[in-house]
Image 1 (cartoon, rainbow, N blue to C red):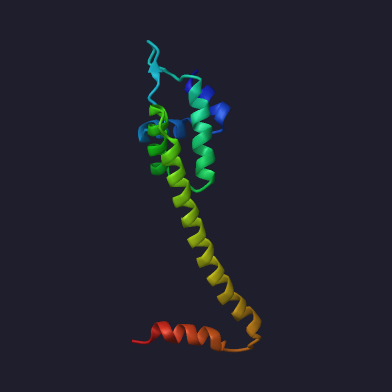
Image 2: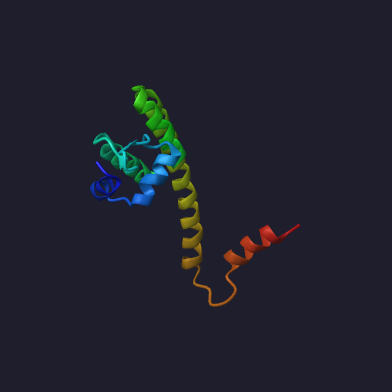
Length: 129
């Protein structure tokens, strides 16, 4: 299958496929005598897996490790560890966002017409030396 076919089937650009190849996310394809890349049908599934994992928040470096392990047939334990790590990251982000939301809600609920004491207190604490 040509690079254009893979791009159409996966919804990514040709440049993205080349980038994935350079990063080791997908195996380097064979070449025709003309020099055109020839991808195995399984690459479509791999690219879809990469895109799905990116949607879950995995970085490409993490995906490269998983794809290398997948090719060797030993992914379950590592995938589980990475998923657990990603859950912890998401939980941390959610806690940070909740704290930001609480701070913003205080400002919204304040009802001040001028110089909000909540904002002034926050600025004062950070601005003190």
